[in-house]
Amino acid sequence: MTQHHNGFAQKWGSTAGVLIACFIVATLCGQFRGSVYTTSTTIGIYALLALPLGMLYGQGGTVSLAQGAFAAIGGYTTAILSTRYGVPPMLSLLPAVLLPALVAFVISKPILRLPELSLALVTLSIGTVVEVALQRGGDFTGSFIGINGIPTLPFIGNSRIGSHFAVWTLVLLIVIGYVNYMSSLRGRALNAIRTDHLLAQAMGVSVPFDLAMMFSITAGVAGLGGWFYAHTIGYVAPDSMSIAMSANVLFMVVLGGRKSVLGPIVGAVFFTMASDLLPGTESQGMFFGTLLVLVLLFSPDGLLSLRPLSWLRARNAPAARPPAGGAGNTAHVAPTAGVVQ
Image (cartoon, rainbow, N blue to C red):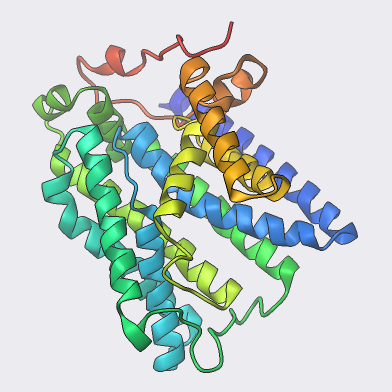
């Protein structure tokens, strides 16, 4: 037990160290160029969407293309409550997180039993339904800024450095929750489900319930990202958090590394920086499409599995083990074919 806790502390310490070091560098750079804070906030919002998807896909083996839809539900919930009904932003946080989580939990039972490709198509359809519903909502949804705009968060206001600090505080809290969850009994059960559904069920794991809870948590954190986006940008529209955003978030997870805690964050950093540097949507599509093909061919576990970054991936892999039993050895077998020689 002591050895397990020491390993957990070591992995969490390295993850926190990398995040804090990058945060300090971005904060210092922002003192000389204010746009760094805006870019950092954008990366942080993407990280809020990508981190739970990384846990769902990388640790649970379940893919979703509905992160943008769940973020839109959270963003619109807080926008409507705060502008139409005068609910303070901090009080609208709870429904903005719970509503997408509840929707995800309700729809999870029938869809999570589908094969991976079918599940991806169904979640993509969910995103389409939400986007069309928001577009056809008339004055109640549509392009939504309210009468006086969506109010800013009380402890941030219009401060760019305040948004920078706030979003990365949220990211750090999500990372802490990620590491703690994956080192818990439920996290080990999730890892066992990814390894073998039938074996995990034979060992007493409630596969449908655990996957439904993970899917719900993923949607709730996406709602948190939508809540922060709405109060930081001050504007939400049906195309703000669309199907394209869901696809981009999945790209970040695959690019950075779905089996590592830091992988989705690395993917969010790369995607945001590349999007700022590339001139138009067509060139971005060509670049990201080509890059995705190369990553899937030569490094299926993402950029963190490349040899120069393998030490970082190894130190930041979640401390998760399957429940005691015959699956113990199976869950620790890591694929190595994707590592560039």
